[in-house]
Amino acid sequence: MLPDLAAFCAAYPEIEFDLDFSDRMVDVVEEGFDLVIRSGELVDSQLMARRLRPFRQVVCAAPDYFALRGMPVRPKDLEHHVCLRYRFPSSGKLQDWVLTQDAGGEEVRLPATFALNSIEGVLAAAIGGLGICYVPDFVAQEALHEQRLVTALDTYNVVQGTFWMLWPSSRHMLPKLRVLVDFLSRRENPG
Image (cartoon, rainbow, N blue to C red; front, side):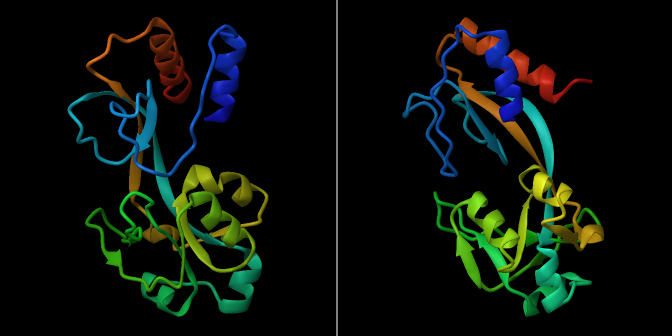
């Protein structure tokens, strides 16, 4: 998404940004945010939303990790691996790894072998060979392309999510915000 923001800044250099990159669940209205990008279910009726793009979770690890510990063939095999777990900063809960070969969704209950409260930390630990991670595809994209990570259990990985742009419905939408929302919508959903 940062390349899209760079393109927006080039097209609209007069618009200034104050970005807050955080894994925590912010209160958009109370904290005065003009726009947030969030995944998951939309439950706050005080917010307007526009779909940004879908994403898919991937299970991956460094090639050296799999060479040492073996490649998991089915989800149950993860019980014998170091699983790098993401801990949601807002709730303290560990993210479940939903792995199934159909849309029903079977959750694999894993021990908290190694828990981190940042997706970037989970990714760095996986690249460093500490274990297997379960992250959004776009987070691992570069490392997968460069073969610093390889995927596993691809046939079990059907869980998808959606990123949304959200803004307070109680405020008049500023023209510069409308331009940004429309621009990102076109870039992320070209069809």
